[in-house]
Amino acid sequence: MATTDDFWCQVKLFTAKIREEFEVFDQSPSEIQDKEQIERDGRQANGDTLVSLGSEKEARRFAIVMHTLAQAYSHVTKGTYATRRDVFYENVALYRNQSSVDRTVEDLARMCMVPRHGLHLTITSKGLVAGCLTYTTNDGLTVNVQEANQGTMIPDGVGTISEVSSEARYILVVEKDATFQKLVEGQVHRSYGPAILITGKGYPDLPTRQFLYRLWTSLKIPVFALTDADPYGLHIAAVYKFGSIARDEPGLCVSNLAWLGILPSDLAALQLPKKALLPLTPADCGKLASLAAHPDISSSEKWLRQIELQRQLGKKAEIQGLTHIQQDFLTTVYLPRKLRQGGWID
Image (cartoon, rainbow, N blue to C red; front, side, top):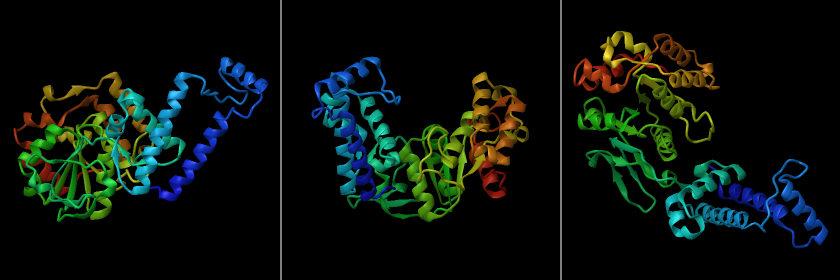
């Protein structure tokens, strides 16, 4: 995570660049007229788009950027966090919609060359955690995750939590909320633990990935992923382990995460009925091709083998498909056997 000094340095460089682009007050009328002509043409000779504060749209955009930057700097210097939703509601008239805040935070992270969570403007987490875990929030509140029957929300300001403590032997990251709830209801984290269960409810958001990374680095225990045996399940497991294909950032990737299942290589041995095996769609095949081209996946023989095997099978299966074998097959047979005997890929 960027320090306050690093962030302030990037802010100064960024604001200096803005001043260069927007300073027109000391220029002669002919220079301003030349710029107005360039603006009508759309681009300067060097290819950069010229932004003019004379435009109401651009003036508002400039105000949004500077207001968001001020919010970020305030929280970074204080060591506090705010959700992007909070930032939006503090000035609805300026932002007008939530997407305006989200877009600006993404732009600022790129322009200031810091990770998105380094701005201390977080998104509201959708992830859940259950099991053997306690931690302390920034305001001194001790959270005992085991007290929540259906899991507890992952905190938004992951960077502020402290005193992370657990006797868990491993962390299990679950793709779907429905499967997560089934495991929690079946007390899997106690019966085959102690363990910590986490779900990002599909593709994980930044707080969920950051929280998992924090637990992994603090507790130093194995991390497993449980997903569907399809291209999107593989992708979700890969996001936790390798990072996003579009954008990689420090403090998010759990490099020793192992894909526990359901693996394409598991399907033959499971002998699922035909109705539980779905054909791959053209979109699925395209997803497999893009995953195979991922720099980290392409250098992993084990992960590439699963991709190639799925392509050859031409089939996919969901975790829920295991109920066709036995209603509680996942919790009484599949998971215990996998955790005991191995058979995952790292």
